[in-house]
Length: 279
Image 1 (cartoon, helix red, strand yellow):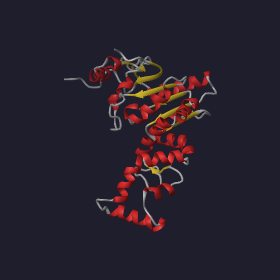
Image 2 (tube, rainbow, N blue to C red):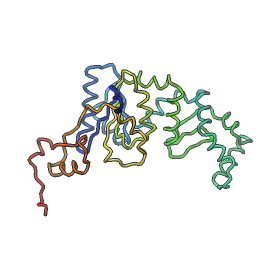
Image 3 (cartoon, rainbow, N blue to C red):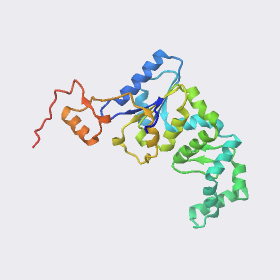
Image 4 (cartoon, helix red, strand yellow):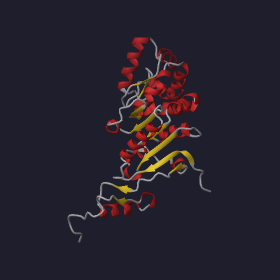
């Protein structure tokens, strides 16, 4: 039995050269013309991609950033709440306890524990929790667990749990943003995809996942969002390749071997031939 499609959440498969960035920009501009008071959110995978999208879109109500930057800005007003600190200890308590015990006697952990004891007189889960006044994103790949610091990966884990445990925060996302784009979904962590998917369900906001599985660069996506992908509305097609000549487009179509990804050459490239003859 086929999964029921979700009307307001879209999947746009966009192979190389299909004009994905141009499509996102045109959708944002057209939406703002029709709904000038709406807020639009676009999540990109890298800062460079965010900067590219921002060109020509410097307008109030259009928010473009990386996922880490957005989640930090969106959630930080809650980070000093006791409920957040409780959740932090619930998620990372075992990891903190392991560092305190330091059974492998790692020297850097010994030094860190000694430094903490010298400053606070004692090192236990209870003392650490008492001394954390707020959670924060430390913008590195390492946690600062004794201080409430979240690394890149931990921020995503923590944000997913926040959305699950506090529905009002999840609801705030679609109340604030009427149009949401997740660019390069194939390189996004499944937790991020599920976070936005669950937030967008049964709302008036429109959510778009854009990307191309064949262009996966990073190993963040593990395939665990496939069930949800099958429920997404895929009526929007980007089937014109604006970059390549017909011979290359034909090769790409054979590589993809999927009618959902099949492309045609643009008018300007349709008559172009390769510079060399194939043997």
